[in-house]
Length: 42
Image (cartoon, rainbow, N blue to C red):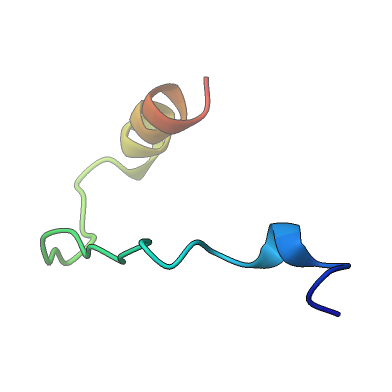
């Protein structure tokens, strides 16, 4: 299985680095969704 699915295995040097803690609250969910789509997808 290791040979067949080698592309699924992360390199040993990979480190998970968490971001700052936040509540996820916003006053304008639609605008925040658009902002995140522009930043991360488009």
